[in-house]
Length: 214
Image 1 (spheres, rainbow, N blue to C red):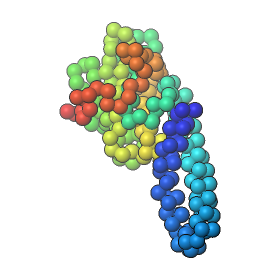
Image 2 (cartoon, rainbow, N blue to C red; image 1 turned 90 degrees about the horizontal axis):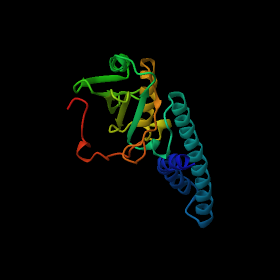
Image 3 (tube, one colour; image 1 turned 90 degrees about the vertical axis):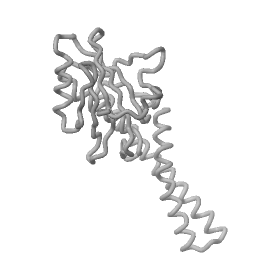
Image 4 (cartoon, rainbow, N blue to C red; image 1 turned 60 degrees about the vertical axis):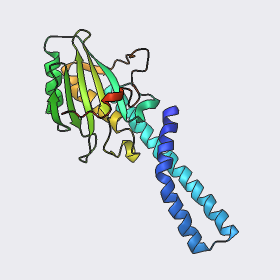
C-alpha cells in the first residue's frame, strides 16, 4: 500500500500541470463566474484524481510483475533513484563470475562495460526502448557466492509506466533475469549493516558522482 501511494504521488504530480491547463481553458471558455469556477474546479479535481489513481495502479502492477518475474524484493523504495540489491548464486561452482560477466555483456541493453579488477564490473544499462540509461555496477563476493548489484538513475528516464521514477528498479529486475542463466537467483534480501537490502540513494557519499568508466 505504501508503494502504491508513492506511485500515486508521482502520478498526481505528473497530472497536475495538465489539469491546471484544462481548468484555465475551461474558465476561459465558460467565463470567470463563481458558478463556472466551482463547476470547472470540481470536474478537474475528479478527472485529476481518477487519472492519477489509474496511472498509479498501472505503475504499481508493472513493478510487482517485474519483481515477481525476476525474484527481486519489492518494497516502498522501488521508486528510489538508487537501488542496491544482493543477488545470490544457486550452487556455487568454479567460473560462475565469468558466466555472469558473459551473460551481462551479451545483453543488447548493456554498453560501456568496464572491469575494475576481477571483482567488479561497471556499465551503462538501457532500461527502456530509448537511449537513456542508468549507471550500474556488479561486485562479486566469491566467498559467499553473492553479487552486489548497484544501480543509479541520472538521465531523466521515463521510469515505470511513464512516472519518471522506478527506472533503476526496472533495470535491477532486467539484469537479474539476464544473469539468471549463469546460476544467479533473485534478491537475497540481505541486510547491509542492519539496514534494508535496498539502500537509499546517495548513501555512499563521496561515490555519488561515479561513472562506470571513471
